Image (tube, rainbow, N blue to C red; front, side, top):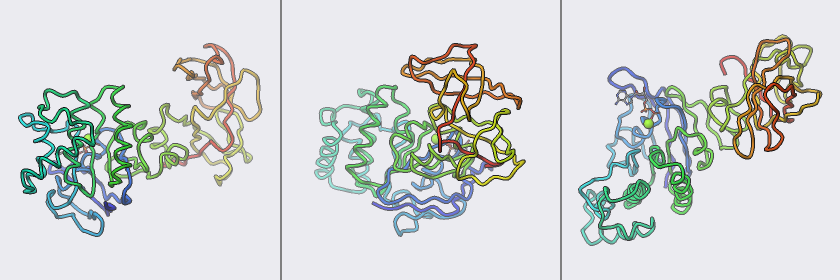
Length: 354
Ligand code: ADP
Ligand code: MG
């Protein structure tokens, strides 16, 4: 087990793409850490640079107290599970799991025992003599994990480990992965573009954009207090409402309607800001209410136990649409007039460029 420390880590590919841009990040010993961000933001590059499959163009990587920046992959004591699992198709499950031990020149008997033991831990014992082509996606993924576990690395690196599984299997595998990581206690970095997966699994999350880290925090922190509008828009099953606002006479004017300024935000009169509130943290009512925004219902999306209701705000300000989560059975109809009330302590303010 080991912490991972990255300082000013930079990767510029030969074609000039700056995939990592002076990135600083510390991952704690034993942590289950998620790298989250849109496609192309540098997640795989970061994982491969930690693993030594890519060499950094600048900056450093430490694993525990070892500087590994210049070390080849085999000397870093990390194991990576690739998005496509990269199993050897001509080898059996047993041979696949034992492969890294063979590279490490562990003798044949010890290899076989270790492979059987690891297979047992992952519920693969009955499949040891099969080849990858004879396994389901979920089973292949477990074999890839078993192969990574077999040599007891200090660090696990998992690149979108669940993205090739169908929705139901993915949920099962998610729970399984979380349990396994808890039991092993190995520092694990897993990459995902799926914010729900990151929130569900991780001890902490780093949200990336354009080769940089935009925020690091626990799932609760990044969900409740996104540090900027990028993170706010990326985290949450429904995106946060982000609406232009202006401070007037100590009130926050949103689409022409005055709201209280969120408690802990110092503001000055005349300042223009972006007001953020999650659809989950708004209450809808058909009756006029103080400190509420008035609008006309334009779309009602039924999402099972709740509906996502979109309203066009009707104040005298700029046109704006806001979404609110309404519990089952209390949905309005398109065309209805209604009010949305932000719950206390759940509104955020962002300044330009945040
Ligand atoms: P992610 O995993 O977040 O989707 P990647 O790390 O794969 O992102 O890619 C980050 C950026 O680097 C992208 O612009 C991608 O096109 C570029 N890139 C990735 N691998 C290479 C490579 N081997 N050569 C050149 N550019 C690359
Ligand atoms: Mg990737």
